[in-house]
Image (cartoon, rainbow, N blue to C red; front, side):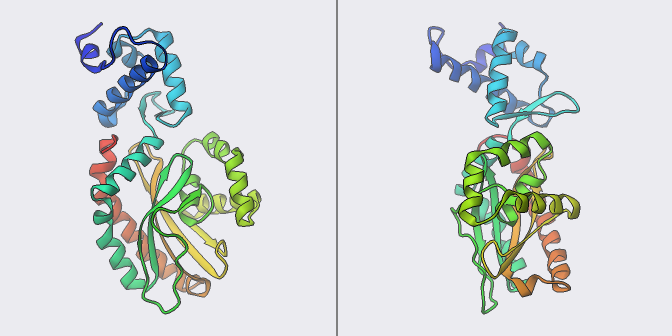
Length: 275
């Protein structure tokens, strides 16, 4: 076994069962967090950890199944996955994510007089982590910080799902009983969710109306290093305020704000590790 593998392994030689499996899985996650944007091939993971190919194959499959790692189709390399990115953002919010986003969100809200939201993907849910209330007399406060929604239900939740690179991942989420239950609770059928997703993929942004009666929302994705969305910046208002032609002017401001926020978040996004 290599010296680097000895350094990475933090479980006792005599550990067995769940503790040993957890230790080995943590070794792979630590390894991937240390290589950053380059990722690792399967053979690289085997070589660096000193684990057998069978063990690495089993662990990699399990970690990918639960979203802790992901494989880039073009290169076959493995990276930390969406789920950890979501946890990283949730942890980062405790240590300053909201502060990073706040001035950009505040400026966008001041320009439009509408309410602005920042959401992250955490597992198979969209979680609101920041909100700025608009100054327009009739406000659309569709979510508040801490609120969670199934992916695909709401403008931010739509872009967090629609722009996932792997179509099979989108289908997996839509097939989940929890997702179907969320649709039922909101009075939305999955055909409508699929229309929102298709429109977002076509237009480059999500536009959702009347999920909360009388309101409309638009959202843009913020992408991680592998190209999957890890966060979304959205704006909500009463429906007439986001009808054409005003929607195009608001969308232009939202695009500029999203680009600025993504640029400021790059140090967090490139770290690819929980903070």
